[in-house]
Length: 165
Image (cartoon, rainbow, N blue to C red; front, side, top):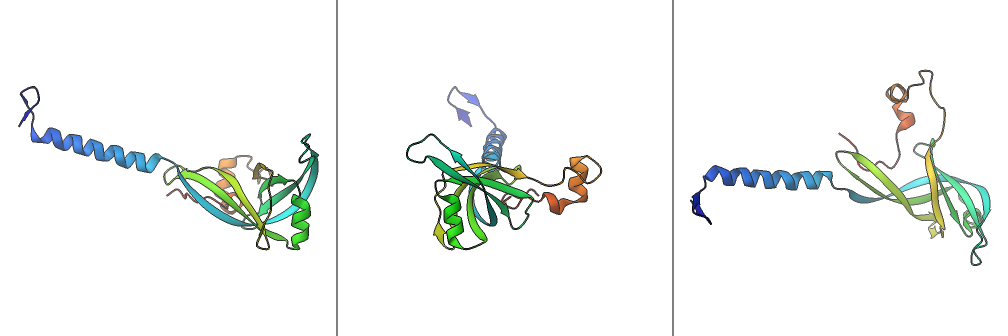
């Protein structure tokens, strides 16, 4: 076959180009982040009231939330009437919705809180603050990798929607 400048190309050049393009497409599909929404049942407790300096919201109420599936992981959030709304709901569990992102290969990369509901009613959040693991620092070996092998149930993150295989 002749191409543009008159040089002859072999059929196997085209096969290599097609295979390379397919490999690139597969790599992009496997390595680019996907977003997934997940809702988790959480326990809650009010922890503080902060002054903001904002005339519209002179103070915000702060609450901590822990995953019922694994209470060692907790989140913190604040809102203009967060604690008042939680207490008025009369329930000890709420549903927190998260936007998670990650890949099938690398697992969960991150997440943001997007919605909080108690007893079917949405509660206004001002900010989603820090969260993470809380609990014992170790189980004797002082090696987190070894602790994770010995006690995987204690380190299972409840909203990892991108399970590594």
